[in-house]
Amino acid sequence: MQAKNIAVIGSGRIGRAWAIVFAKSGFDVTIHDASKAMLDGAIPAIRESVQDLASFDLIDESVDTVVSRITAREHLADAVAEADLVQENIAEVVEAKRALFIELDRLTKPDSILASSTSGLPASMFTEGIDGRARCLVAHPVNPPSLVPLVELCGAPWTSRDTMERARAVYEEARQKPVTVNREISGFLLNRLQGALLDEALSLYEQGYASAADLDTVIRDGLAMRWSFMGPFETIDLNAPGGVADYAARYGGTYKSIAAGRLPFDWSAETLGKLDAERRAVLPREQIEERSRWRDRRLMALLAHRRDIEDGEA
Image (cartoon, rainbow, N blue to C red; front, top):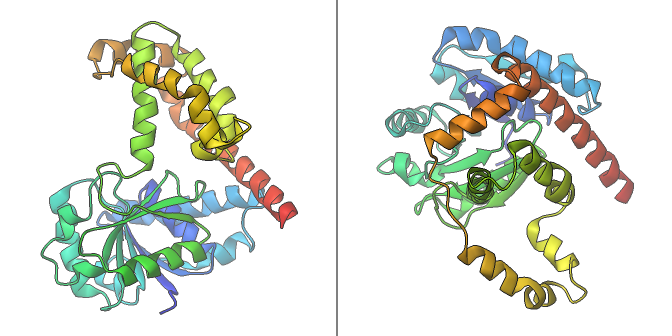
């Protein structure tokens, strides 16, 4: 089966971004939301985002062509009837997801792939007992998926290999970067790695080793410079003349010592209040949305740069 039709359930930020991902890659997309007000605002918001992408030359067709592939559907049954893949984006509530997946299993074609954008709930928590559970999986994106291409694919113990392979093919066709999580784990891969770094950053902040601004600088102007185009394993492989084994021989003892002395962060209200005050002094709360849009434009510029580099290497 070659996927042509995608249904996006939930028209918030993630859902709208998924609709853009698929539409700009040539898929026909239906989008549905239980809230009529949210659904009514979806297409205008999508058009605005696609116009931003066009300003960075990140779409291959006109704005009108991309947006024309997306249709809002008020009724769930209409939205999913022809879907080859359903991308669910509702709230992180187990019972709500279970109820929706039961409906999706009933309303969709037997070979449709049913994928959840959940950022932390394993598929086994909301697909157990569903007749078509073999076609259900998690497809966890990074916010927003229209600008950050990673998607983590993680099946339940009963998800079929065929489902995983077909899902990966769909996301690759949509020009995302799918990775396979071999078995269920809380937080999947990205949030566990992000959580480990965030825990240490908060711990260092709580212990008074540096300000929040300086810790952000360490990542933004230090680690992230390399991490924007290579991962941690390739980084250490290139940081010693003899590769990973040489790096481990040189620095393994240091990292063991650091790990032994780490103080995990317990998410104390006092420290988080201090951090929030420091951030609000830099960025007033009413400016967060504007700064988020700035972040998205910076991501667009980075995507355009990476595309140009990759085209030059082809």
